Structures are given as structure tokens and as C-alpha cells.
Image: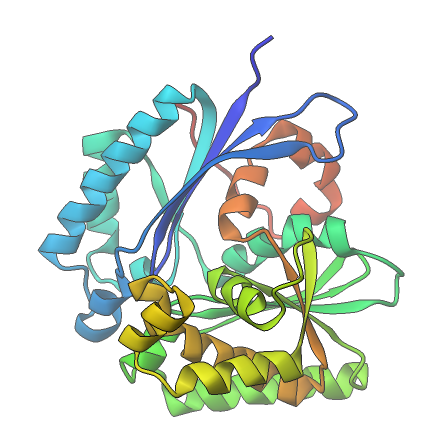
Length: 317
């Protein structure tokens, strides 16, 4: 019997990802297994955060990429998919226009999701995986190119979600407003005061996973632990080099070499204010959350979590 395949498309400020997963047999440890992950660094945020719109060139590249992703989904006989765009498309004045064009050219309906929905998708399955005692408090931190998503979780309950326009590409381009920085720090301090420093950090995204491999290379589990001392040491070492030198010394891709230090600085800020000594680093991110949100088996398992701020979806191939 052929396995059912599901797909998620994550259109971020730095990269655009396609993740294909297959539904496992009943009784398996995990309901879904990764089949294919494709990542293309389009850097949409370079346009959106500086010019206020997606350029004609990058818009054309995005259309071409969606056509390619559509073909891949057909090859894998994907039964359902969901496509979500985040901070760059939220900020771009021509985002809705580009969404319509992509739908017309490819049949892919892209949702431009708000920061709260982005945060919910990132944390939903991780809440199931990491939940322990009812009094355990986790702060999920996802650092993207345009924004940083924060989820505060207690047990299996999503207590609060916030999205701040502080991301790696915004940092590099000098587009982070001072009042946003102050709001970010103020919110983290409020969390620290509320939970009296008993907060466990959970970091998601490509940057923290790369920092984990550089700072704690022996960690290779589904859920890993990166000490803040190691994170700081790696950040300080990376800071000594130009992006080009980082590519050579640490085998980083060009787009990663540029944004990895700003990402580390955001995580270090969160750790400093919340008095955290380590970051828990799962292997899952937004693309996983997008796929999981449309898989019937996961929707059943995560019913209590996904009921929070549930939105309607979408699409079948």
C-alpha cells in the first residue's frame, strides 16, 4: 500500500523551503517521516525591509521556484499541501499581488500568515514532544530573517505568543526600530519576573541548528542541548571573521554566513534576560509545523494544542 505524502512550503525572509513528509504506519514512533527538504535562499527580506516591496526580479524567481516545487509535489504524489509566507511578504506592499500571480501561474495558494500563527505552527508539535510536568515552562524562540517569534508554554498549554520585528536581515540592513528592541527586552523581563527565572529556552530555525553543530558537535539527537557558554564562544569566534571567511573556515553557505552572528546575538539577548543556561534545540521548524497542520493523524494528536487560535486551511494538489 502506497504511503500518503504531505508537503509544506515556508516562504521566509531569507530562504524558501519545501518539505515533503510521508505518513507512517499506525504504531510508529513518529506519525510522519521526512522524505525531502529543498531550501533556496531567495533573500526576499533584502527587498521587503529596505524598499518596502518585492522586486520584479525576485518576484519572478519566486514564481519560477513555486513552479518547480509544484512539479516536485506531483512527483511525490502529494495528497495535500499548505504554503505560508512570513515577515518579508507581510511587509511587502506588493505581497498580495504576488500571491495572486503565483496562484494564477502555479495553482499554489500562498497564505501570508501573521506572526502569532507563525509562532503557533512552530511550537505545536514541539509542545507535544517536549511537554513534561504541568509546571514546566518553555520559551520557544524562532529567529527568522524578518522577525523573532516567542511562545511561552506551560505544560501543554500555550500561554502567550508574541512576534517582534527583530530578525537577522532587518539587523543587517539597520531596519530594527529602537522601540521594538525596547519592547522585546521589556517583554522578556516580564516573563523572567513572572516565572522567577525558571524558564527553559527552546530554539528553532536553521541558524540555531548550525550554531549547535558548531558549539556542541557531539549532539546528534532529535532534541539537543546547547550551553549558553558554548553559544557565546561560537558567536565570539564567528564575529572575528567576514562572511566570506566564515564560509571557508566553517563551511557555511553564503546566506548563512551573513546572518548567523545576528541570529546568535538575538538568542544571547534572550538567554541573558531570562537567566537561561542552555538552549534546547529540536530538529523541527516552521516547515514541519506547516505540514503537521494539514495531516489528519497529527491534527488528531495535537487537537488540544492546534485548537488554540486555529485557522482554516487550504489546499490539496
